Image (spheres, one colour):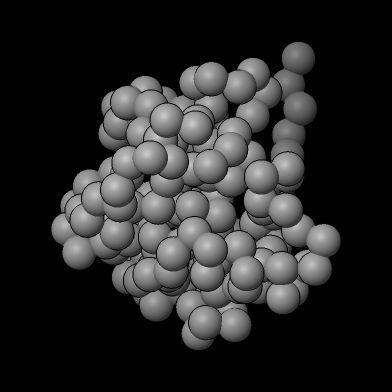
Length: 162
């Protein structure tokens, strides 16, 4: 990852790319892009909440990221649904670390991989997505669909047949 540190930030559709500094900090980077923070600002904010947090040594938890969002006025919701019209954090299976996830940032138009590995694209998201995180207000249309859906039956009768 050291060679990536020498590269300048890249602006993508109004979002400044935040690059990983270790194998552990992809979620912190994706959150920083989502919230419009630099890497150092996001790491400092995380340490105000969890003083022992070291983004180079351990990944950020989703609970920490949601708390950071709350502090910044971002009500974040994680689910298996994504409204692709809006920015969000996309969690996928890692292509480089076994049994791990990797966080990407969706701008609303483009997918940004904080590792700059070139291994992740929408096709990979379609087959290996784990979860999506967006602002609650950006998911309002999806919530409205659920509210408008017919009520599920309150009682289910099971019958056995052999």
